[in-house]
Image (cartoon, rainbow, N blue to C red; front, side, top):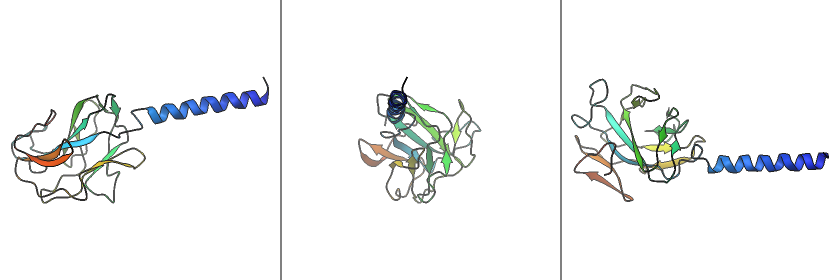
Length: 170
């Protein structure tokens, strides 16, 4: 085999590998949304410790499963990698609830807990891809939150929800 033919095959394999990476749901969280969250939870959803922790719901409206490995979520736009996800899959057209409890738990197969809590007075909330690119945010700051009233994205509009639906459609 000539060196030229060898290099050509190597380039073809490299290009195929790059295409697969860019098409992989592991590398692309575009489409995921923060569909609902609660920053003042006193009797809506308990965590496994019996605490009424804040919670965040992520929705995958796409037709493919998404692996959140090394994606991050934050309440500080100056620190996009504040809390990184373990290898957890958000199935197509499914929801994932994460507790914003400050407990910092990343047990695969168990409840996930961020290392921060949400502020009911309003703050930034963003979801980032592994490379630090913003996948979704609620703008520069979400508005003031009220006890056991959730807030989130309903068909592209940010609203308060009369009935909270963690883990299911709004």
